[in-house]
Amino acid sequence: MKLALIIFGALSVAFLGALFFAVYTIFVMKKETMENNDIDEMTGLRNRDGFMRAGKEMLEHNHNRSDGEIALIVFDVDKLRLINTLFGTDEGDKVVCAFADTIKSIAGKGDVVGRVDTDDFALLTKLHGKTSTEIADGFGKMLPTLIANSSVCEQLNFYAGVCVYDGHDDIYTLFNKANLCLLTHSDNQRVSEFTHEMENRMVENEIMRSEMLDALKNGQFELYYQPKVLFKTGEIMGVEALIRWHHPVKGFVPPCDFIPLAEQFGIITKIDEWGLFTACRQGKKWHDMGLRSIVISVNMSQAQFVRTDVYATVLSALTETGFDPKQLEIEVTETMAMTDVEHTVSVLNKIHELGVSISMDDFGTGYSSLASLKTIPFDVLKIDRSLVCDVNDNDTSRRITSAIVAMGKALKMVVLAEGVETNEQSKLLTDLGCDLAQGYYYSKPRPANEITEMLTVYMDGEEAI
Image 1 (cartoon, rainbow, N blue to C red):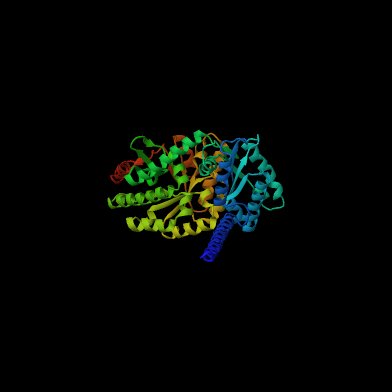
Image 2: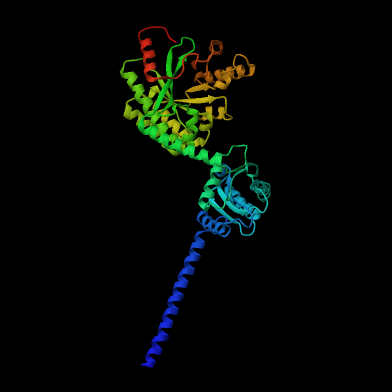
């Protein structure tokens, strides 16, 4: 009996030892696997998950900030996608690795460094008396030396968002606040530090985002239409569809107040699609009423080309509404047209083959005008209002406008001047040979029912505008 107890005890100890060893082995293997999964293969830095885990531990160990202030800095590689496109992914990878090496070189002992997105890096650092701006500026000074021999050295730029730890935020909140700075920075501000005003603006923007989605659901958006008329006769040849928002509490919300936010939040594609279908339905309604045929132009945002199948959307709008494609015009800006030129040209050519006209908006404001005219099937050239506004008083504006008109005529395009507000402008632009006018001198943007009345007047043979 005694011997049996001894043997049983020995077996129990051996079993418990084996069990402990197995559990320990599993724990170590799991920890090693987790650590391996926390590493970004290209740079050797922590990836997003790894950065968050290590950052959480660092904040917990420095909860009372007894070792001084801590800040989280997010570095954004400016235009990495463009660098990859122009110079190749190998050069883009060199840029990424240079960013990683630079951040490692400025990180102190105990700091946490990570590559948290394709073109974003993060540094959780003890300030040691320095300001976060000084650290970011130091990064900017060191970066070029690590990639001096690269063909993209002159293209390098970065933006940094900073949030100083307040002793209360968790790592996710701290990261989101630093990242918010990147979303709200200005082009001439390399380093932006989080403020409570910024947080309030973020809350206001989120409310606006929700309200815009509600506006789409509840029919608060409305299209107004601004006439495009022949300079010589004042006869209406077309209209531009322009969105208006009638907020149930705020009243009229100007497009400049919500369109940029719609672009930022990705809602602009839904608004663009709604505007296209609404304009096509209205155009078909005017046609069915027996009113004169006019061209309706609809603006397309860059996001629409990047994130959606624009051709399929246009085809669907025309098919579902029965609107004549020859009465539809798509307006794009030259800057937008020259972004991812190959894709844009392909899409616009397909739309053009449907019979839809293509108009270049804001001509004369960008750097790529001539190149875009050569590659994209434009039918209409819209002279930007910045030239029209002082065409009577500024010799340079007048000469540029005259040259644009001559070029448009040579390319067999219709030339439209937008922003015409005075009789003097109208007379001079007529003399210069512009075909169409758009502006408050002829008509402000009007709701559909007022345009219906105007078109009915023409049908009755009364005078033009």
